[in-house]
Image (cartoon, rainbow, N blue to C red):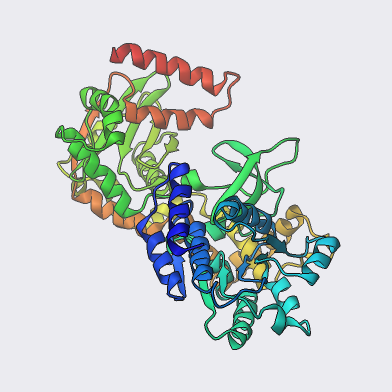
Length: 517
């Protein structure tokens, strides 16, 4: 098959699926045709597999005249055995058209004895394997001869191997293969590095079959492939293991400012993009009933209902900061006017709900946030700790710290202690340190983690300073605005009632739609 014919078949293969070739794929193909190695970073689903796989075929085509024997030409290393079968299917889907006559098989711990026997007689042209299986194959007496025709090595999920013992295992294997084949082409595949640490942290403790909570649903973890987590709806009565906090992760400062900039454009009638155009009717209602927040204006709304007096504030600083900010304001308001306040937060604001005797208007009697005592940064740490059950939060943090430090006995192999037993043991240490050794390093570590990770004290202080520069836009409401609606629903979730949340929300939506019409 000539090079031009292979190029035509690749183009036809893409066209037949309605796909377009990306520039980075062409760049990989050009480099592969020249025998160059590289590391490819691209987002999930962008076609990394086809980039290096077709590059390996181009490399094999160029060397076809020199090597007429049959044997192993492409070695594909995947760090997860469960992905080998998926990789084989993906390569076979295009291999039938672009590499007719090539065998594409897997060699892992799951490979049957019969298939191993067939491979012992004749290697396939493409072999998908794991670092452990590759090490075993390289230890065989005839390994040099078996890998004599190898032209390309592809290491999938490269980031999974970095800085690990399995990564060293792959490096040693590559070193041995390069000693036998000096011109061996090697390519690594990795998802974009921006969110790898966060994504790996989330799923690091999950095993196949574990249940977890996401978006209010109990899901079952199936596997991770190319930084994509595959799940299915969980069945049975098995409880959730960890809780995914993806919906509660705080906005970054950059994203918060970008959202406020978009609202400023909407306020000026210059909204761009399909998302903002879709939101235009809702934002128009928000502007008509209240106002739109911007970088320079802090929107504060008040509402009187049968439930009491509502206060809605929209700093756009993220849920974690809003939790601390709402608790801080509730504490300072209650200190000036003895009352009980309910709190609801989301990513763009928070709600305080108090009795009908409360009057929020005098508390926001100022042109900017700098003139309000509520937003003062003086005695911030003391007020934050007083506004929250900081002792309880620290005690929960201390359990994990005590476990890592070895203070708590976790049980014998096969007989682990229950979470309740671990909590009881760590609580005893916590109380002793709190009463008799307040400067204990483990205790202060727990308190610091609460302030930095759960309450984001640094960002809270920065947010207060930013609010000092914003103009106060105090808007009394006749009914809940679109922005306030989301906060009220957040509070409904936490209330004990025999009425279904969906029915209560539907009734509220119906009333607001009538008012908007």
